[in-house]
Length: 436
Image 1 (cartoon, rainbow, N blue to C red):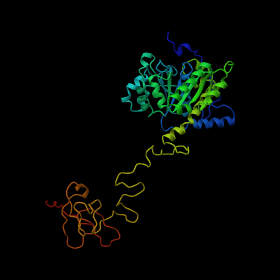
Image 2: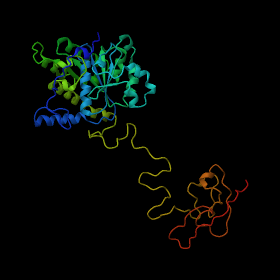
Image 3: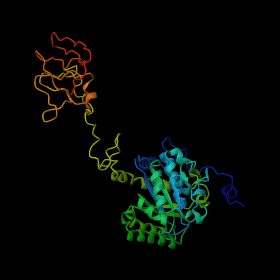
Image 4: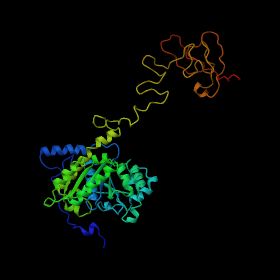
């Protein structure tokens, strides 16, 4: 018997529980004007433009605490509110279940994507390996066979993130239990935001605290200080556990703590539907998304994509780190807004002409071979000068009378305005170059 959601879940879909009809710029809203203003502020945070890939790692030492549920619900919230491409990856080496939280559109796994990396050149190439939820969240599943999924190692994860990060502004990673398996090194090294998931229990809170201790002792103290703790599945009627004490403990160690109430829809372990969540549960994940978005500005300032004063990105992104100014034009090209050298200007509508004793633009000067003799123009050329660079210059020939004001005969220079009596040059038959 197949243990699928179609067989095990009650097919009678309940009415959406997410509150009143959505506003124009929102999926749902709760409370009065003050609460709605605060929610709009958080929504603006969530919709902060992300100009480089932001990577979120969801981890825990203990299994069954809700890592996959948190990854899917958070990713669905980000995708729904941002209306952007959001991706979740199953990096659990023990037959992860992320692929069961979204209705599968493909049987491809993360291993298949890694093997196809040389052929992934666009978003549509990657889309063949993902399945998409109604919220817009895309997931890449892992192999259900633990013997196969363990072959997804640190190098594979880094290669996959390098390719996926060019197409997705936000990537979530659903890690496995433990911190010592191969891919976990890459997950931690590449993470911009860490989410530690705990349950409202003694062993769940202790495992989450131990996770922070281990990370701090192994070079991830900065990541721990910016991390967020999620206490998942808190029952409002529970009396045994002092949840407020757990919250107080992690508030001293992390950037923030979010309490997610128990939700029957999420507890079913099937496909996640935001509209089926209780309003308080959905609001909790919305607050979690806003708390994560508060770090978008820091992340982009670190990459040189935002101004240092925290202003939004300009229309054109500033230079990347290491570039103090925009790229300079090639030699011979003018700066933007300036005319070409010798080109028409307001006071000189025609290209500049050489005067007696002055070489043509680009001709050798003093100290270079074949210097021009003062008062004598160059001998006529069969072709314009730029095409004769590979040939030696002919010996200059003396001419009787003053030099021609328009340059060498045969050159198509137009007459200069303002000089009376200027006549256009007469075309002359081409002359063979002198013998060397």
